Length: 120
Length: 328
Image (cartoon, rainbow over all chains, first blue to last red; front, side):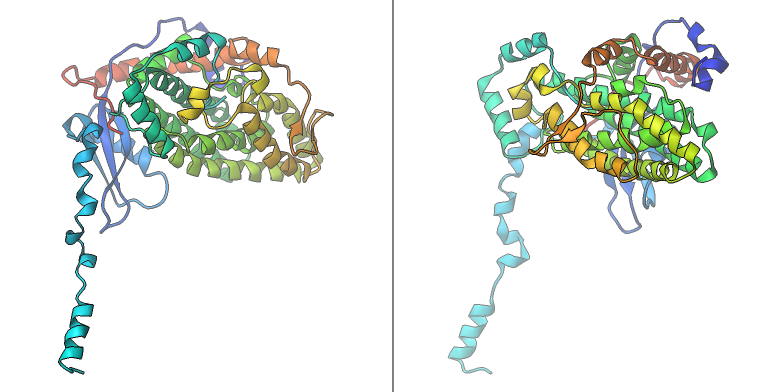
């Protein structure tokens, strides 16, 4: 007798058939949106045969805790990405500070002008 | 060993003999030294990939097989509150298995291959799940101490270098802390309950003491070190260090309830290191190689699930669809 009721109920010790080597279900990327107004964020993947099944698994896997307002699933094969090898194409972006609001400072110039022209 | 790597002498030899492109290796190692994560498309040494697949896969199998002894207690939980917690915990464990399989898949081994290797015995899972859960008090000890040990291991591993594994572990550690708390709650209730309940929990502790010492793997004195795995942040702490951290955190929580552990030599020495009797490493080896009280049964349940539900999987398969490796 086993402590596992499934073993006793199903005569599992008699199962002798071969191992599973079937092919794979489709891979889906899952995006999780916590609240209305927030960005959906990549959460992980599921394997499923249809979008409906993927959404069901996504709910069980990625919406078990906390708040969820929506989930997106998209076939992994439909997602296009850059290669990490090309990471350097983004390298100079942080240097382009003229695209940031903090780059533009005019207070000194205003004060100098006011002093020179005696503006209160 | 949960998500843990221990090498045999042979494996260590292969690992040290593998030659890699020195330029690429240097870039890879610099990245890790800077504390950056490695992502799936990155170049990585063959041995890094191989050891990570082995470790993550073994960790995934442990989650799936680990849910089996607890799953059997769902129908026998003593009340509604405990039953709800246990169902949630078992569902989490299966979910953790799924997250970890996904992480291992990004390294190039398909989920089907991993499941097949579990059934054939080629892949291992944590030895601790080859022991039976005889009473409800075993549920308390597993939830509190096995999950406690797992958290020690997983928090350390979440500081590793492989992005997908770290991301999976972050989510897992968050959910595991609920497992630990509900296990501790259950443990305290039994320990502060009737004399029969106290006896039950003490006996369960006596049963689990050795498997818990085995949990972190053989002593550093008897296992192969790999400088490379440490350098590559695949392995982040030695077996003995993790074991010591576990004892330091949890033994006081057992003693504070007036419970004992079945080892007269268990004590903390002047250097803050826990000493204990030899936990019979031969037994550990025997059990990990298949000769434990529940090895056969655990695999049988998995095999049954595969076979009995094969027709569903086959009905769902779309032959026109091709498998894609997860992106992250």
